[in-house]
Image 1 (cartoon, helix red, strand yellow):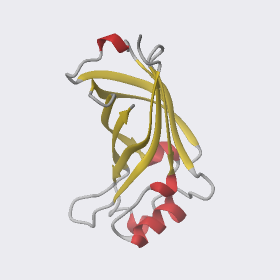
Image 2 (spheres, one colour):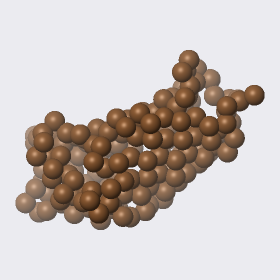
Image 3 (spheres, helix red, strand yellow):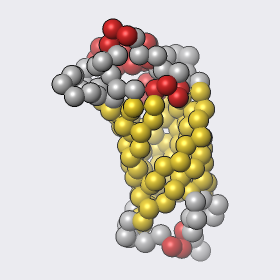
Image 4 (cartoon, helix red, strand yellow):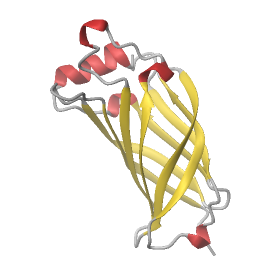
Length: 163
């Protein structure tokens, strides 16, 4: 009998909006929640925006106050489904799956489709993915004075070990 739900509250989402020759712009959140329903393939992810940490405190402050406005938009979510997901077919060998759903960020919701690698481990199910989101899709304004220093195409990576 297969376990119906796998969960983590310690998933990792990282992003990078760096451009060549300028200061690295990276944030990382290590307290992301994710729930996977193994019967339906439905997946839900929740990250508190203030959970993203940066090497430079001022960068973190600007991220929360000026770009993401975390007091107004305190969380980001993804709700969707893994295409052709069958728990019985998950093995220790990483396989590509398509995740379709809605990403909500900065008060805007966008349909997205990304490739995720999924495999079984001794602890549970591991899901990883790398994809790009555009700041324009979520009405995140980058002031012209720093627009050459920050990429509008943000590289996002996620790592979840669901138990």
